[in-house]
Image (cartoon, rainbow, N blue to C red; front, side, top):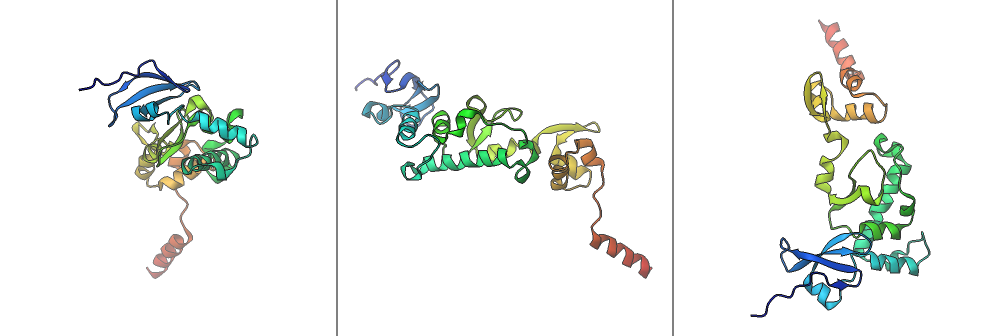
Length: 223
């Protein structure tokens, strides 16, 4: 039986092989790219010459081919087009915070990411079903503070899921809202759109709807 080939320390284009990845289903290696990103790549892709970078090589080639800042969609593969949508959504969130959520107000995007191809080089292509996420929501969009995570995980990472203490009880904001007899959406609108603090948002009773008031008056008249 032929001994398995050890690629540790070998260089393939921009990739330097660090170690064997024992969690991958097929024989793969953990590599470090000259751009600073780490990526696990199948041995066959390395030895055939199919993989020469984490993906930054192609983005650099596309950037040279097209004008800086101008994106030629015809040159993008489906995965790159998906990344472009996420890049566009990122800019929409920070440029139009009122249309998304006040939590994006004041959020900055690093200057380098005004160029889509730099963003693509830094973040690489996103796996299907993944979305762009900030590791620290108090910081802006930049290479060191962003990652691709599954959409389901991102939903748990929103401000709706943050744990806070109110009146001696520790729970997520949604649960606090229900405990005070309010809809979570009402509480989040008060915080994000009106700028209320959490205590005021919870302790202020919801204004009764006109239909509810009319029904109450009718009941009183009939008594």
